[in-house]
Length: 79
Image (cartoon, rainbow, N blue to C red; front, side, top):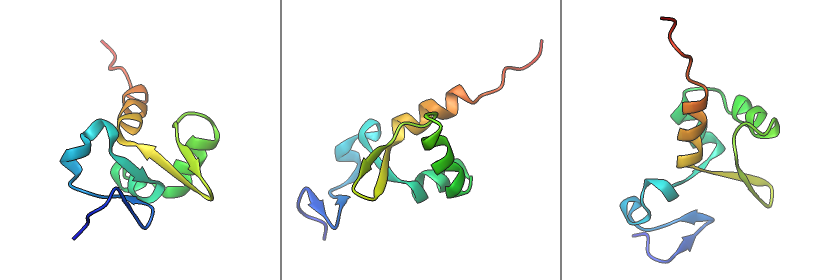
């Protein structure tokens, strides 16, 4: 069972305890969520389009930031 606040660099405990606003994603998880290649996620991070925190050699993204990014990428429908 997952018990403690951190285990192996991952946030532990039930995801609902954190709330979706604070859910932390890896680059791979964000890529799967957005259905794009992880290299594209890294590109968006480098370009400043997708906010991420660098922790040592890895990036972590908040799901709320990924959702906000997705909203900004929406195309407006022509009327």
